[in-house]
Length: 216
Image (tube, rainbow, N blue to C red; front, side, top):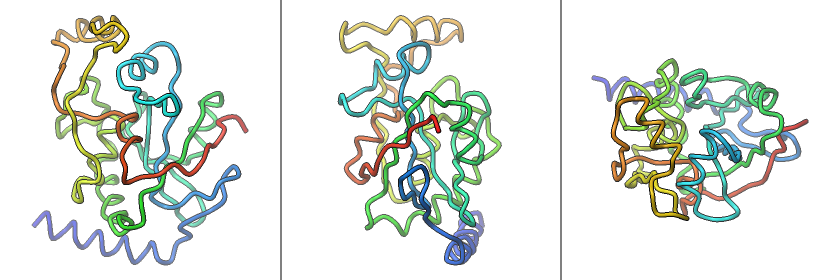
C-alpha cells in the first residue's frame, strides 16, 4: 500500500514539475531542480570536526549539504539542519544566515535525472523529522548527507560506507568526537555504516557545476 501511494505521489510530482520552471540563474550560476548544494566547512567546532575526519581531497571541504528544489522560479533547499531539523526553506534564507560560507553546486549525471521526482517525494516525506545528533542511522531522525542519500536510495546513487572518527594525521580518535560521544553516554560509532558530505561529493555519478559565494 505504501509503495502504491509513493508511486502516485511520484507521478503527480512529475506532472507538476513539467509545468514548473526547473532551472534559473542564481548568483551567476544556472541551478537546476534536483541539484545538490554543498556548504564549505569551517575550521572549528562541529564543522571542523566533521571535515577533519572525512575530507578526501584539497578541493572538497564540506560539512553540510542539501537538495535543491525549484518551484515557480524560486529555489528552495531541502535539508537536515542541526538547528532546525529536516526542513524546506528558501535558498536565500541559508545565504543570509551563513554569509561568509561558500556554497558549491553539484549536479547528478543525466542518466540518473529520471530519479529526481521520486527523490523529491522521499525528501518531502522526511520534512519535520528531527536532526540525528548521534549520526547512527535510524528511521526517525536524519543528518544532512543521510537525508540526501535516503532520497536517492531507490536507485542506489550513493553508497553507505564504514564511518571513521579518527584524525588521519594522528590515527587516533579526534578529541572533539571523543568528548561529543562521552556527553551522549555513547561509544564512538567507529566502523558503523553511514555517510558524509565529503564522501557524497566524491561520488562519480555527480559533477561539480560551480561556486556560489555566500555573501551577496
